[in-house]
Each structure stands twice: as structure tokens, then as C-alpha cells.
Image (cartoon, rainbow, N blue to C red; front, top):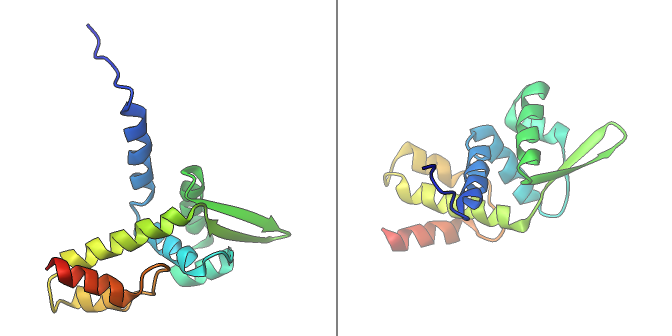
Length: 136
């Protein structure tokens, strides 16, 4: 007898696809740049500068983010600007950063480097560190 499909299975698959799309450092970096920009679009040229990627690599990363519905884009002539598709993506990044900071060893080089990351909207670095300190 074949296994029955649960009605929630497609929802978990969609969620898994979301996390797969986030599973690359360059894509996280792009999303953090877009989150910091807020409602302003970020030109591809800036994303190239920030990530240090080749144009073809960045194009592939952006395609993954677009397919998953995490970012949107707009073309004007040759220029393409990107935005987060939903403000919730920025909140997800804040939670992920807090989780990262909570998992790093106190006094480690990684923790010092993490404190130097650019601020994300909705949470100051101090607020994130304070939240992590309360958990410790």
C-alpha cells in the first residue's frame, strides 16, 4: 500500500526550499545589503562591489533568490535594482544573526568579526547582542 501524503507536506517542502535558497554565504550577504537598504532598490553594480562575485555568479545567486520569491527586481534600461520581496525577510535575517551570535564562543575571533557586520533594520547590533547576553 503506498504511503499516504500528508496535507502539510507541500508546506514543509516550500519551507525547505526557502532554507535551501538561504544556504549560501553570498546570498545571505546580498539579502543583508538589501535589508539595510530598506525601501530603496540596490543596483546590481553595488551588489557586485559588496560581494566581490563575478557577474555570472551573482546572476545565478539572484536567480535563486528570485525563484524562491525572496527578492524582486526592476529594470530601467541596462540598470537592474533589487529589493527584498517582503519585510519579513529582514526579520528572518535578524533572528539568524542573533542565533549566530549566541552560538559563537565568547571572546572568539568569529564573535569579534560578527560584531563588525553591518546593522540590520529593526534591530541594532547592541539590541541583538543584549538579547544574546540574556540567553547566556
